[in-house]
Length: 111
Length: 121
Image 1 (cartoon, helix red, strand yellow):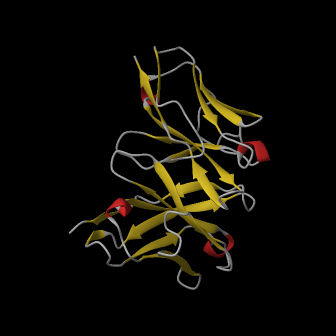
Image 2 (cartoon, rainbow over the protein chains, first blue to last red):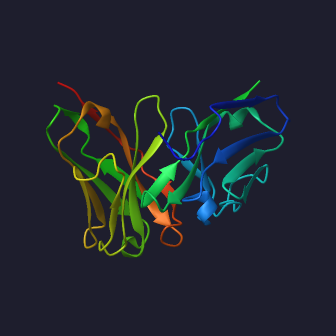
């Protein structure tokens, strides 16, 4: 059972905007640790999508944006495309566990 | 080009041991912390362990603490994970990943292709 909670699924039509939340607590996101996001396309290896809360690695479209506030973080996808259909995971560090943690994961479906 | 290749997975009986390896290339291995992450079939990602760039610091998830041991050989650019006292719930694809950023604020990039461990009698 992860300490970072995400909605199991979100969906949207092509071109729409969807947001994935990552709810943490005072020992991880709320303690000031950064949040990072990963995209896992069906049958593939997870890929870094966002680091340092809102920074995009080279090659990641600017349709993806990240933010963090208090004990939670969010990943937004604007102009949703069919190729964005994947599982998305947030990740941070937890001082209470003395280790890293992943979110529960969110499946994004493009209608 | 940064490349991570895991090996050593397979089918093993409960209670037995297994050693996973991760061969790194394309970057200065000695300057990065390294992680293992696992993913059970159809399930989410679970962080397993991390080792500092020099091997002096190691942290483990509670679910594997005392059973798994991470190590690295910087002379061979190789990361290892010894899995002892294996349980059926340890069955998963195990990924090695490079850690970047400051200590306790690592992000993982890139990831290897993974190696499958199946614990079954």
